[in-house]
Length: 129
Image: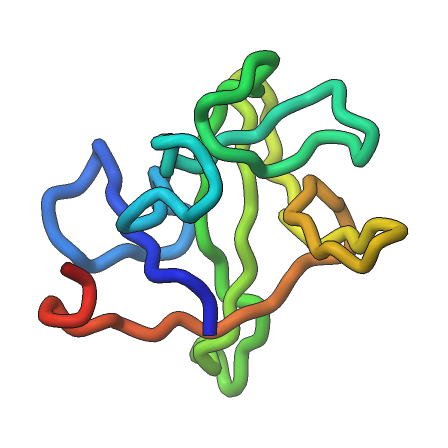
Protein backbone atom coordinates (compact mmCIF):
# COMPACT_ATOMS: atom_id res chain seq x y z
CA UNK A 1 0.00 0.00 0.00
CA UNK A 2 1.24 3.48 -0.83
CA UNK A 3 1.15 6.79 1.00
CA UNK A 4 -2.24 8.36 1.84
CA UNK A 5 -3.53 10.96 -0.60
CA UNK A 6 -5.95 13.84 -0.26
CA UNK A 7 -8.31 14.32 -3.21
CA UNK A 8 -10.13 17.61 -3.65
CA UNK A 9 -11.98 19.42 -6.38
CA UNK A 10 -12.70 23.11 -6.80
CA UNK A 11 -15.94 22.24 -8.61
CA UNK A 12 -17.66 20.13 -5.92
CA UNK A 13 -18.15 20.41 -2.18
CA UNK A 14 -18.91 16.79 -1.27
CA UNK A 15 -16.55 13.86 -0.81
CA UNK A 16 -18.21 11.91 -3.63
CA UNK A 17 -16.32 12.05 -6.93
CA UNK A 18 -17.71 10.86 -10.23
CA UNK A 19 -15.71 9.94 -13.31
CA UNK A 20 -13.95 12.87 -14.98
CA UNK A 21 -14.30 15.14 -11.93
CA UNK A 22 -11.35 17.59 -12.00
CA UNK A 23 -9.15 16.68 -9.06
CA UNK A 24 -6.27 18.11 -7.14
CA UNK A 25 -4.14 15.29 -5.71
CA UNK A 26 -1.68 15.70 -2.87
CA UNK A 27 -0.01 13.61 -0.21
CA UNK A 28 -1.49 14.14 3.25
CA UNK A 29 2.06 15.09 4.27
CA UNK A 30 5.11 15.68 2.10
CA UNK A 31 7.01 12.40 1.60
CA UNK A 32 10.55 12.28 2.98
CA UNK A 33 13.16 13.20 1.80
CA UNK A 34 11.22 15.54 -0.51
CA UNK A 35 10.79 19.24 0.01
CA UNK A 36 7.65 20.55 1.66
CA UNK A 37 5.74 20.18 -1.62
CA UNK A 38 2.92 17.65 -1.56
CA UNK A 39 0.61 18.49 -4.50
CA UNK A 40 0.93 16.55 -7.76
CA UNK A 41 1.60 18.25 -11.08
CA UNK A 42 2.82 17.23 -14.55
CA UNK A 43 6.24 18.45 -15.69
CA UNK A 44 7.47 18.51 -19.29
CA UNK A 45 11.00 18.41 -20.70
CA UNK A 46 12.33 15.57 -18.53
CA UNK A 47 14.35 12.57 -19.81
CA UNK A 48 11.39 10.28 -19.05
CA UNK A 49 9.03 12.62 -20.93
CA UNK A 50 6.11 14.30 -19.21
CA UNK A 51 6.05 13.00 -15.66
CA UNK A 52 4.01 13.41 -12.48
CA UNK A 53 6.07 15.33 -9.93
CA UNK A 54 5.46 17.40 -6.83
CA UNK A 55 4.56 21.05 -7.30
CA UNK A 56 7.98 22.54 -6.58
CA UNK A 57 9.17 21.87 -10.17
CA UNK A 58 9.26 24.44 -12.96
CA UNK A 59 8.11 23.74 -16.51
CA UNK A 60 4.71 22.43 -15.42
CA UNK A 61 1.85 21.53 -17.72
CA UNK A 62 -1.40 23.24 -16.72
CA UNK A 63 -4.28 20.80 -16.35
CA UNK A 64 -6.32 18.57 -14.06
CA UNK A 65 -6.17 14.96 -12.93
CA UNK A 66 -9.27 12.75 -12.92
CA UNK A 67 -10.21 9.12 -12.29
CA UNK A 68 -12.11 6.93 -14.71
CA UNK A 69 -13.37 3.39 -14.39
CA UNK A 70 -10.89 1.03 -16.03
CA UNK A 71 -13.08 -2.05 -16.20
CA UNK A 72 -16.84 -2.45 -16.27
CA UNK A 73 -18.91 -5.54 -15.60
CA UNK A 74 -22.56 -5.40 -16.60
CA UNK A 75 -22.32 -1.61 -17.04
CA UNK A 76 -21.01 -1.11 -13.51
CA UNK A 77 -17.50 -0.24 -12.48
CA UNK A 78 -15.73 -3.19 -10.84
CA UNK A 79 -13.77 -0.78 -8.61
CA UNK A 80 -10.71 -0.82 -10.86
CA UNK A 81 -9.68 2.70 -11.86
CA UNK A 82 -7.09 4.54 -13.89
CA UNK A 83 -5.73 8.04 -13.49
CA UNK A 84 -5.87 10.47 -16.40
CA UNK A 85 -4.45 13.94 -16.94
CA UNK A 86 -6.39 16.54 -18.91
CA UNK A 87 -4.15 19.39 -20.13
CA UNK A 88 -5.90 22.74 -20.45
CA UNK A 89 -6.57 23.66 -24.06
CA UNK A 90 -6.65 20.09 -25.38
CA UNK A 91 -9.87 18.30 -26.22
CA UNK A 92 -8.76 14.94 -24.78
CA UNK A 93 -7.25 13.49 -21.65
CA UNK A 94 -4.18 11.24 -21.47
CA UNK A 95 -3.41 8.10 -19.48
CA UNK A 96 -1.06 8.24 -16.52
CA UNK A 97 1.10 5.12 -16.54
CA UNK A 98 4.27 3.78 -14.95
CA UNK A 99 7.76 3.96 -16.40
CA UNK A 100 10.59 1.91 -14.89
CA UNK A 101 14.06 3.43 -15.20
CA UNK A 102 17.41 1.59 -15.49
CA UNK A 103 17.72 1.44 -11.69
CA UNK A 104 14.27 -0.13 -11.28
CA UNK A 105 12.58 3.02 -9.98
CA UNK A 106 8.90 3.24 -10.89
CA UNK A 107 7.70 6.69 -11.98
CA UNK A 108 4.28 8.03 -12.94
CA UNK A 109 4.40 9.42 -16.47
CA UNK A 110 1.98 10.49 -19.19
CA UNK A 111 1.68 7.28 -21.17
CA UNK A 112 -1.17 7.07 -23.65
CA UNK A 113 -2.22 3.49 -24.23
CA UNK A 114 -0.49 2.04 -21.16
CA UNK A 115 -2.50 3.10 -18.09
CA UNK A 116 -1.69 2.23 -14.51
CA UNK A 117 -4.71 0.46 -12.98
CA UNK A 118 -5.45 0.66 -9.25
CA UNK A 119 -8.14 0.40 -6.59
CA UNK A 120 -9.11 3.13 -4.15
CA UNK A 121 -9.28 2.54 -0.41
CA UNK A 122 -10.75 5.10 1.95
CA UNK A 123 -8.48 5.85 4.90
CA UNK A 124 -10.19 6.46 8.23
CA UNK A 125 -9.86 9.96 9.65
CA UNK A 126 -7.94 8.69 12.69
CA UNK A 127 -5.19 7.15 10.54
CA UNK A 128 -4.80 10.13 8.19
CA UNK A 129 -3.77 12.63 10.87
